Image (cartoon, rainbow, N blue to C red; front, side, top):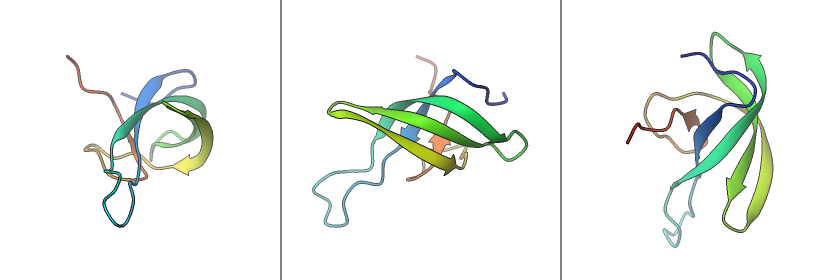
Length: 74
């Protein structure tokens, strides 16, 4: 699948260095496709306490901190 504007994806948060917070996924919406071939996008990340904007986020097949991936089918 190729990324497109408006698609809902998962953004894998970094967590904290001391492990207080784990690296977990957040829902995100793609707001711009920078490079369709490499999967680099801009997005709005939706967290339980608010949202933030991330630019130039790379794609990863498996969840990896600082990357986005397609949500698993349930």
